[in-house]
Image 1 (cartoon, helix red, strand yellow):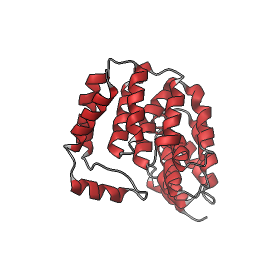
Image 2 (spheres, helix red, strand yellow):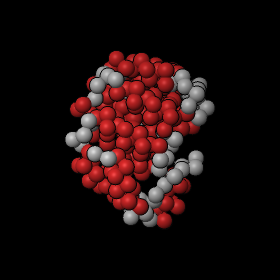
Image 3 (cartoon, one colour):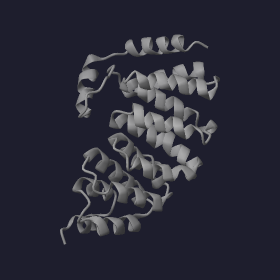
Length: 238
């Protein structure tokens, strides 16, 4: 199967759905400069699923190579398709795939939407399957790359919501605690919020122990799902 034929047809279908109004309004969701076709998310997902039918029987390495090319384009919509295709291979994930996902995080992710789509689904599912790789997230959390740091946290959103990996979540929050980047703060605050849905008291105790040094952005995210009385205590200055 020819990669260029697949990619050319995929891009032709994306280009046919460009909406200049969506393209312009979409840029407002990002602080950084971003490349957009300007297509509604639902349409991108539909195109992604339709084209995956063509490639799904190919070897995983071939599909990952297609994902590499999609990431390399820098278009948001193509990165989302790469995320969707990699996640569709979840039943075939093997330990060696971590290096592929790590490379995408370190070299290709350049906005919060791509970061969160990749990490919530592909990386989060991989960690559920191979929790021995949780230690790698602590290396990510110490990166100089803002997206790698955010990825360390948002990869644990779904496992955290399901009550898993609490000690690792706390450790990553400790590493990221005073990071000055608001997108990193929002990322680990979101991770804590997700974990609070299964471990409310533990996350509340953690927030209370750190609230004098935790940035308010992260703190607000972390307590968002908590009862009003706990929110009041967490936000109080005493």
